[in-house]
Image 1: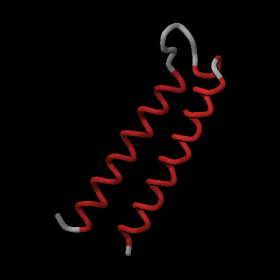
Image 2 (image 1 turned 90 degrees about the vertical axis):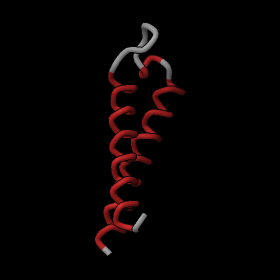
Image 3 (image 1 turned 135 degrees about the horizontal axis):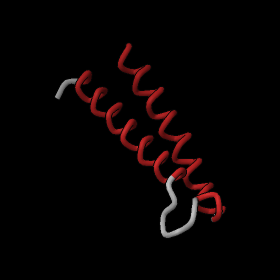
Length: 64
């Protein structure tokens, strides 16, 4: 697999992670929202930021 294909795959993975995290933060799971449980909210925010960084780095590497 060439590096451009790997970059597209990494970007696709980052988008899936980002969408899953947004779902996790917005939709109530088990009868409560993530903001009602601070550790879950913190984990969601950390994952959200990490996935944005992941996408930015992969996009930047793809341009090189």
